[in-house]
Amino acid sequence: MEEINVLEAKDGTVSVASAFVGHQEVVQDTDHKFVTKAVEEAYNGVDCKDGGPFGAVIVRKGEIVASCHNMVLRNTDPTAHAEVTAIREACTKLNQIELSDCEIFTSCEPCPMCFGAIHLARIKRLVYGAKAEAAIAIGFDDFIADALRGTGFYQKATLEIKRADGNEAVIAEEVFEKTKTKFQMY
Image (cartoon, rainbow, N blue to C red; front, side):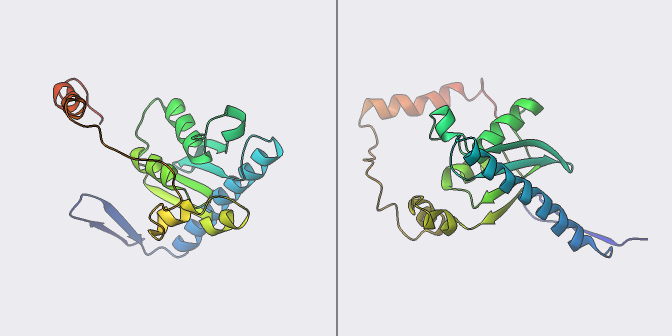
């Protein structure tokens, strides 16, 4: 009989440790399979001229729910990264905005926007192939790695950021208080 240890953390997350022989190898083989699929998507996106060499696969219970590549050029949409595109497709297919029973496999370390989308979708696990530096080496903005590593403090951003003054800020904050009983995320 297989020995299984279940540990529950204070935040309610559950970790399962299995003593069955080969457990780690099975996980590694599965990770390899889906990261390889994400890399195939990256090549496909470049071949189709849809966007940069990035791919993402969302998996639920061992089955692929969404397999996408970067669509920035095709959609003329700077937010159409592989991860965001895969999340959109998975949410549509599953008819839900929360993907807590899903994993995402990506060809490259996600940028801050994609990481934010992964977090907001409540995806339980992220496995990526290449580090952000591989993308930087071929010309992608090192702003991404700076943000991920906390090393650059967005020094290359030319965006001015300012909070609205006076009444505009109050009105904008009131929308949350006035709608909290009408809208529920989860």
